[in-house]
Length: 322
Image 1: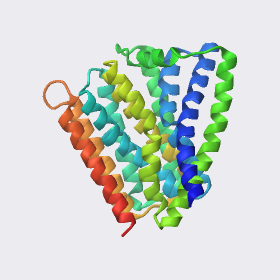
Image 2: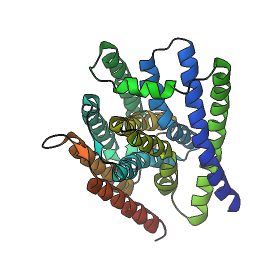
Image 3: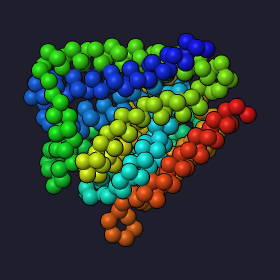
Image 4: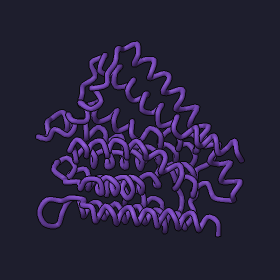
């Protein structure tokens, strides 16, 4: 029992650190070969904040632990909104200024409803998974096309400026790319193994482990980047980071896991966790779009999100040991 616990405690921080280095290396090499700042900003940063979820879920699916794969993806979506944006709004209320954000919020909500609709039959089939991956390709293509034709908004430029600020010589970028990739794979395998062993020891389902420990852990990059964004008064970056991550999680993470290992899901997972994900997504949409005047996520709404997430997590933990 000690070794699996150590595996989680070591595997998670190494996973997060290696994900950051992998993204830095990828961005540096992309810029060296003339890839546009738009693509770097929209694709590499979008992948970077979701890299821990993608790698963990893929390895969990290959090992037949679909509960961890789905729990990690959808649990991260819940944590991103209720915990990450909730804490960020408590630190500094988030004003929605960007038209891009107001356009992407309905898209995120629509994607969430599509995923929930697919799982109504309590199964994630290969057809469901390929549909999500197809929508992911369409989303990426549409986003790039919108950016290239000019949207009158500098949000994508701000993303690219953030990542280009840390570009190093190409040889160092290649080292970080390869080292980050190797450590991503190794730490993911260690983390999944440790989580499965701990779950088995306590008689807890791997879905609960995915929804709690792993989901919170793999959402730490979003927390760090969102807090840094509001400190710099870049509220749209804080919000856009979470919106993009949730779309990546639902389309790419769940899509990849489903193509590797189609699975049945428990009814409690659908009626509890999927419904909560839908609920917090709808609440975020209402707060940020705004019924009257400019939308914003204030400290009261952030506190409600955080308290709700604490209550949800407490319920998960208690139900696991009943």
